[in-house]
Image (cartoon, rainbow, N blue to C red; front, side, top):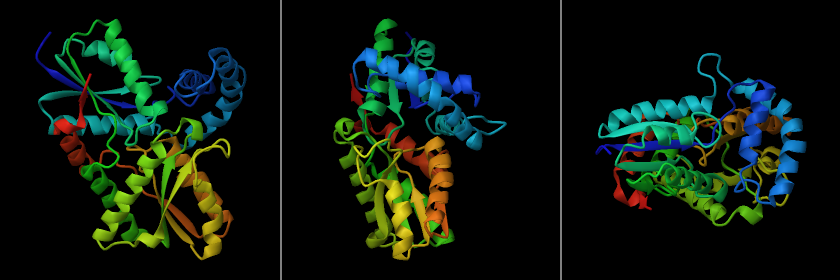
Length: 322
C-alpha cells in the first residue's frame, strides 16, 4: 500500500444516454436501493420492475433530452468532473476522483482503482444528510471496501449544510442573480422526501436557508421577508412541506411577478434543477400569472465553490474516521 491519499467525490448518477432503455436501467438501479424505497424487498421489486421503470422511463427520457448536452452528456456528471479537475489543482497532495452512486463511473470501480492508497476521503456531494442520499453512499462505500479487504484509513464527510464556506458560495451566486434579474422574491428549493424518511433532513435544510438568509442580509443585498423555503419533486402530499410548486401557484396572486429560485441541496445542476425548476417550474409560475422565473445556477465548478470545497476538504473537522 502506497502513502498517497484519494478524495472521491460522489454524486447521484445519470443514465448512460437519453435512450429509453438506458433510462430504464438507471431507474431500476436507483429505485432498487432499499434506502431509497424503504419497503419489503418483494414489494419494491414488483413496484420498480412492474410499474415505475417501465412506465416512467419514456417520460424521464424525454426530460433528460431537454437538458442533455451533445458534447458533454449529463450535466450532473460533467459538472462533477469539472469540479474534480479544478479541485485537484487546489489539492495537489490528493488524487481526486469522481464516482456516481448509480450508473457510471461506479463507486466500486473507483474504489478498486484507489485501493492501494493509504487514506480514502469519501465525500457524498449532498449538503444536507439524508438516508436516501448521503447514507446510501456511505453504506455502499463501506461494503465495497470490506469486499476489497481495504486496510487503509477511511474518512467520511456526512454533511456540510451549514459550513460557512458553502453558505458564502451559495449566497454569492444568489446575490449575483439578484443584481441582474431584480426579482420580487427568492425561493430556496430543496429536494423533497417522504415525511417518514425525512429524519432531521428538513431541519438541516431550514438551517441552510437561515444561514443563506443571514448572509444575504449581512451583505445588504436582500431582506428576510422576501425569502421562502420549499421542497420540490414530491410524489404525494405525505412529503415534507411547504411544496415548491405551491409557491409557483400562489406567489403571482400576491403581486410577485419575478421569482428567483436557488437549489441549495444540489452542488451540480441536474434534472431536478435544469428541467424541473428552470423549465417546468417556470412554465407553472407564468401559467399562474407570473412574468418570469430564473434559476440560480448550482455551484458547479465556480471559483467560489472550488475555493470553498478545498477549505472543507482541508479542515479535519469535516471528516469522520470509520
